Image (cartoon, rainbow, N blue to C red; front, side, top):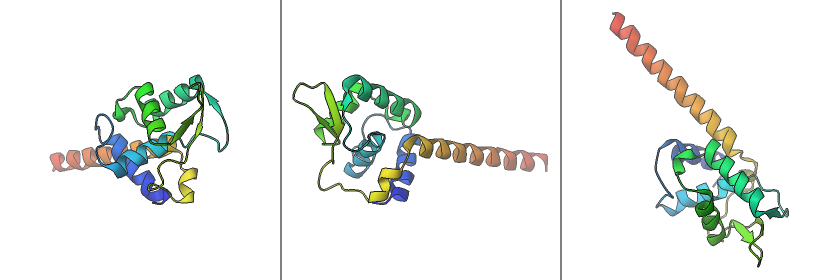
Length: 139
């Protein structure tokens, strides 16, 4: 799956208003991979750093997911997108499950930028629709 495909589907999922993790495996893995794209390869993060970054991701990129940070972090660990040390206090980016490998260009996707652009596009479509309705009402 390419960066363009991931960006398109991420926008649809996060703007769609669905609550909780998607049932479809493909959609779930797109969200989980997108939630860890901020991580630098090989870097180690404290639990607080991970929680803060995930909170920001949930707020700015995908508030429609409507899950808490701890649930998201657990899901990321369970599916291998986050590796946790034995003490449970430090994390690093994981590869995710082998059956869900994304194209290399997906690493360059900024989910927050993707969502800003998607929201702007949706707002522009809404304004265009309202303008066309207003012009029809004037006729």
